[in-house]
Image 1 (cartoon, rainbow, N blue to C red):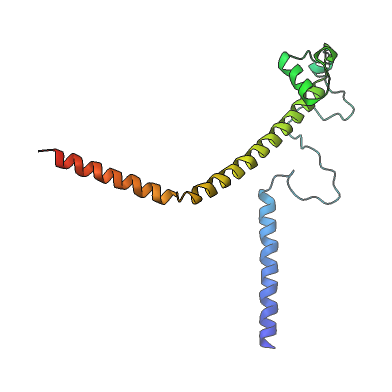
Image 2 (image 1 turned 90 degrees about the vertical axis):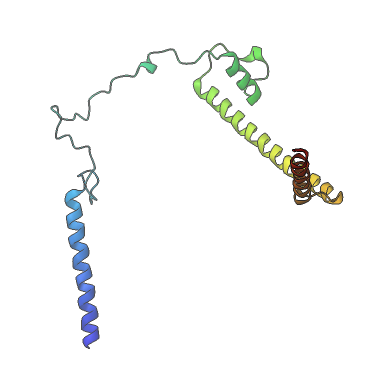
Amino acid sequence: KLLVGYNLSVRFSYVCLTDRAVKLLERNIPSILRLTRGVDLKVNRRLCSKPLQEGAPQPRSRSALRVPGHRPTDWEKKCLLWAGHFKKPEDIPETVSIEAIRAAQTTLRVKVSYVMIALTILGCIAMVIRGKQAIKRHESLTSINLEKKAQWKEEATQSTSAKP
């Protein structure tokens, strides 16, 4: 019974400590970051001079005033052709949407990455084949290094013996 009472008191003290820690931390957490239950989160505008008007119209951005579309450069035209958006250079209109150009560039990035993956796999296969051929010729890195070191030792002994 004594151990059971001790375990309960230890557990109760841990709960009290965690509650105190949470209360202390809540004081230091900004009001936006605090967990709120059932409260609509809005930006706190205590330091602003004007109150927030929900129905106020937003200022229009400059892009809305411009003519929609983009005059593609030669490189962008090539991207559109290579990505398959158009068949011939004559089919490309004078103005193309930015989204179409970005989609073409993304398609090209994916195609280039596929080509690089294929080339990496081919390079690995070629290195395995060359390594197997070198084993058949009884060549290895250790034998090549030992031959070089032996040659360097010969050159070193010849240079020391040649000096009077």
